[in-house]
Picture 1 (cartoon, rainbow over the protein chains, first blue to last red):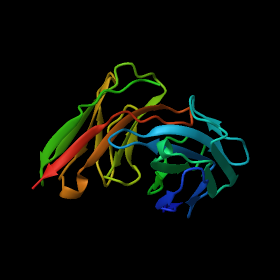
Picture 2: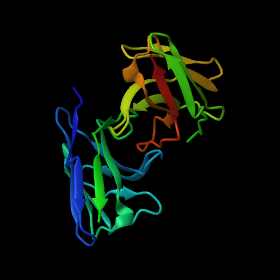
Picture 3: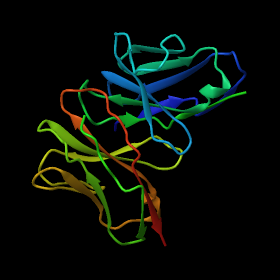
Picture 4: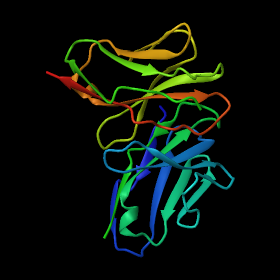
Length: 116
Length: 110
């Protein structure tokens, strides 16, 4: 149990286009979902926390208008990178938790974004 | 949240126990110790967590010192597939977000 599916696993796009990444909890309801970004040889950096039906809480330095997060249901959250630029190229990882304060997060496999 | 300190890298022989230390000297009473690992190019995986008692599950054991200022994750019989970055995280029960430090890169060698 506790499977999180993230799609796509790999995407290449042209500079200026938008990319949507989906994160689904397949066998449980996720009250809270998280989005992380990871650059090569670095640790995960929390971008935002989203609770179902609420606006996402973004970490300092993360542009809300560039990284649009929607958590419309208890099993789906999406991250849209708008007007992507090469510096947005990174490994994006989502996770889901059953409750808001649960320390146990279930992670997706990640999405590797390359912006040309 | 309390800060954690882990060695940047460790090696372990296949079949032997891997003991990964973590220092969290500023841990508060309501903060749990969590361990995750990330195999190369994959999402992290939850391993185990504890408050003050030692814990064991099918993946690992967690030993927390009596003063709670440090802990050790034990993989009893390491395999090559255990090669990964292991993250020790201190997380209060009242918060939702979790922050990852640099972790320990464990390499299991044949």
